[in-house]
Length: 150
Image 1 (cartoon, rainbow, N blue to C red):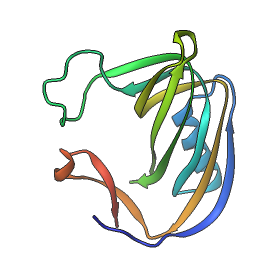
Image 2: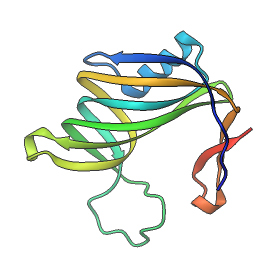
Image 3: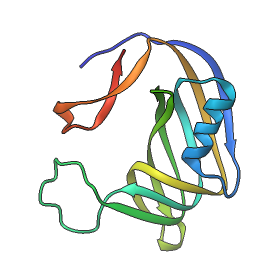
């Protein structure tokens, strides 16, 4: 475990429109506003399609990262996340809980791999001025890239 006090800067309302690519929209927001790192306190919306890490198949090692993906269509949900720029590339990390509207709001939760906005997605982003963050492969997390202090 580690902790660091954050110095925060600007706060933004980011509204993604129908048809927008969710992760691409966040990358565009960062580029257009010079945001290198932020936390996303509010992330809510409706999606024609969202892809999450997951599977409907039996899992042999429940602790191992999953390579499989599930696609959820016509859904609504909430989430939160972070944005860190690594080697000049904005890397959003967002987890969501979403429900399929046409399947009694059957819920899915997990890491968002991609998504397309159906009606709107509203995001509150808070810029992090310091400390400087990066993402590094973490052996304790089976090699997944986790936030680390630079």
